[in-house]
Length: 548
Image 1 (cartoon, one colour):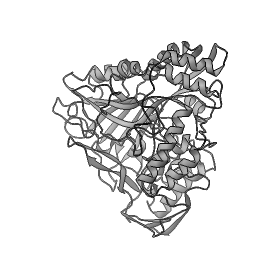
Image 2: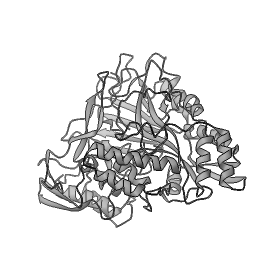
Image 3: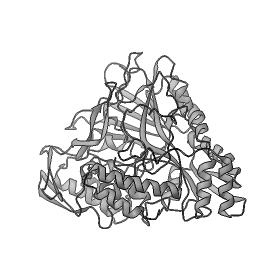
Image 4: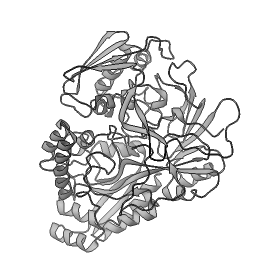
């Protein structure tokens, strides 16, 4: 992500094979499912403590669970913190374990109850957990943590409230006793337990936070951005922003112990450098290689390539309040000028799927009939530009993430494709934080964005693009009628009612061409054969373990 976590996190359904369709390139026959990928091969871990070396291509911009906005921001969160709930697991058709993003079970909580009216959730907590500082992990800490997320009012607030923002979903949090905490909601929301399993709902140590800046309304905590106040199975032994981090197992953690004793996390922007370090044995797991580099290893002895098809899609963001995107015909023209098959086959090497619509193919409520991919039709695109009545050339600055080789390749293709329409694209590579400032600050004229949901629900996912005028609507999209249909989706009493509203919402969205969907991404993770690995959209490294 960068996978965008806000509809992360970035930034994904665990372990699904590449989807078979006429618009999906054939997946390499040697790849395995991402969930629990294991095999036999040479050992990379010495006897005794297990050290696992991993690498990602896009760096974390903050370690604070309350402020993280992308899947890249939460790479370390699930290791450093616990949440009341955790996502369940399921077994796919191949017998491989994977994350189930539609189901949750207690994690720090031991149990929970829902009131008859659906407006109150009461969580029961263990009595003997402590933070590394020695402070109690109790109901007061839970209340403090979630109240803090709401006070800071960053991306985390949107996530823990399932994007109900005015008023917030969470009405009040009450400490009943040290092992009981009650959440009263303003609305009935079946997604609330899912929200309590996200990194944004992490439980922090109040004593550490208060000793290092405390909580200031609408203001990120700078200390928390580079330190942990955690409750999880790992402690942050060291952290060099943008370069590396070391996680060490907490021997006093009361939950299930992680599989590795030490995890060395590396952020490597250069695709060639990451590939070389993997090949020379320095890394056990890499996530972020270009699909071309990952595909080059699929027949190489000693390596396993695992693919997970996600809800994360790569989009060409055309903020509808910026020129030339205020003109609907220009937006539509762009969607027909892009060589999608070229991107799928030559950039992704088959790790993806084409579609065009507001709901990804992997999400319940997807309407295949109304979400067929846009065709590559330059003549139609030129005709639409003529209908638009705009004067060319038009200059557009395209913001990308520096060091992201996939975005760089796509940007080059877009420069050529849009040039055919008289749109001159200047590519503007930015650091992760600068890119975030442009996109989330609603300043960008155009951007490439890998975007997926934090909560696996169409109602949550669409609450960004289909809710007019909210600050998280980075495309400044306001399709007529869709805000009303979105409310129907969220209030639906059953799948049929939800799907009927989504079908009309999809038709409206496609007709408006608010942005270009380039593809549904399939993350290619490469690891040494024999490595234990379970795909999780939030990069939960508790089960990761170097080959024995």
